[in-house]
Amino acid sequence: MQGKDPKTLIKIARASGGEELGEALDLGVRVRELRKARNWTLEQAASQAGLARSTLSKIENGQMSPTYEALKKLATGLEISVPQLFTPPEKEQVNGRMAVTKSGEGNAHATVTYEHELLAETLTKKTMLPYRARVRARSMEEFDGWVRHDGEEFLYVLTGVIQLYTEFYEPIEMRRGDSAYYDATMGHNVVSTSDEDALILWVTSLA
Image (cartoon, rainbow, N blue to C red):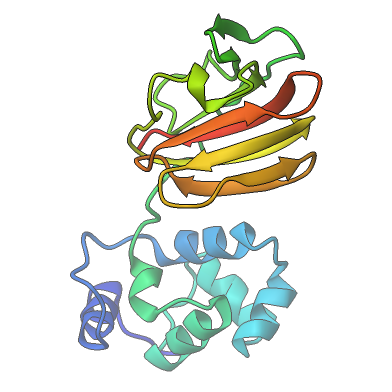
C-alpha cells in the first residue's frame, strides 16, 4: 500500500478539523500504545478497524505508511479522531503512586465535634483528601457556625446514623451505606443521631 509521508498525514489530519499539532510522533508506536491501552490483540484491533492483521502489524512496526483512508479506519476502530493518532497522550508515563493505610494507622486529629483519621498521608500533591471521621457531635449547637471550604466533598456512612445539615437543604438522615456528594463551599455539618458515635468516610477535593 503506497502511502503519504508522516508530515503530509499531519497536514491532512489538521485539515480534517483537528487541533494544532506539535511535532510528529512515531505513528506505529502511537497506534501500538492506543491498542495496548485497550487491552486489544492485533487481531481484535484489526477487526475493529476493518484492516488486515498483517496491515496493522506493518503499521505498528513502521514497515508501512498508511493511506488516509486507512488512518480513518484506524481512528474509527480506536474511537478517536484522526489528529489524535498524531498527538501524544496527556500523560506520557503511567504514574504508579500508591499509598496504603492500615486500619487505625491513619494520622488522628481530634476536635470537639469530630475525630478525624487522615488517610494516604504519605502521598504529596494529591487532588483528593480522604479521611475517616468519628462523629462526636449530637446537635448543631456544638458547632461554631457552618463548616465550609473550597472544593467538593463526598460523604459515605460506614456505621451508625447521622443527620447531614446543609445551608440550602433540609436536614437528611443517613444510615450505613448512604452517601452524599456536595459543593463544600455550601455550609455543612454532621451530627450523630445513634447511641454510639457514627463513623463516616469523607473525601474532599483539593483542586
